[in-house]
Length: 68
Image (cartoon, rainbow, N blue to C red; front, side, top):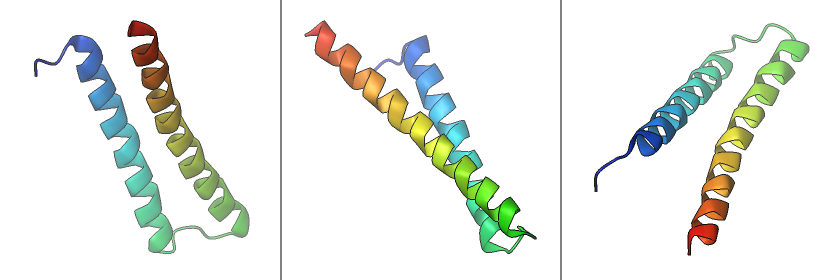
């Protein structure tokens, strides 16, 4: 399969978001959050990043349905 620039962009943005999620989770696992508020902020950031990936997948599903 030949990747178009759209597919390359999607792949890279998904990879960057996933890498960021992994880094935040790793830091949380190492006890980097010094306060409960900092912990909540980082957990919320992870949730937001995961929601972004879910939204990308939903948008792709919508576009694929319209193309059929």
